[in-house]
Length: 182
Ligand SMILES: [Cu+2]
Image (cartoon, rainbow, N blue to C red; front, side):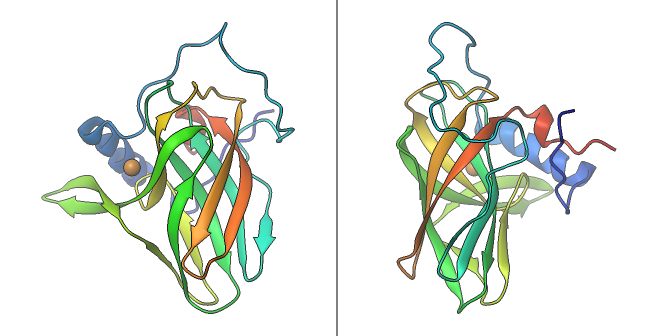
C-alpha cells in the first residue's frame, strides 16, 4: 500500500490555495519527462511519499521532508516539519546540490488569492515547530539540475540563523501524493 501524506491542517481550503498559487506563480512547475535519462537513486532513501526520516542536530529536528516532482531546469517546492526543543531560531536557507539555488516562500492572502512571496527567513519558535506545507510557508529549489520524479530522492540542507545545518534525504512525490485521501 502507498501511504498517503496526512497534513494535519489539510483539507480542501489548503489544497485550493496550493493549486491557486501554482497557477498564479508557476511555483512547483510541471512534471518532468519520465524515462531514459533518469539517474539511478544512490541515496538509499526510503521510497514513497512518507517523507524523510528524522534528523536531529542540537535542538533542531527536521523530518517528513518531501519534494514535489518537477522537470530539469524548473523549480519546485520543499515541504517538511521542523521541531525545536531549544531557543527561538529562524530557518534562513534551503538548498540542494540538485538545484542551482534555493529560497523560502510564505503565502499572502490578497483579495482572496493566495500569493507566494520570497522571505529572508521563517521563524522557528523556541520549544515549538515550523511546518512547511502546501498552501503555507515552504522552501523552493530553483533551476533543478535534473528531473525529479516520484520515487527519486534529494539531499536537502536546511540552514538556521543559529548556524545549525540539518541535511535530510527527502523523497520526491507527485502532486497527487500531497492530497489527503479521505
Ligand atoms: Cu513557492
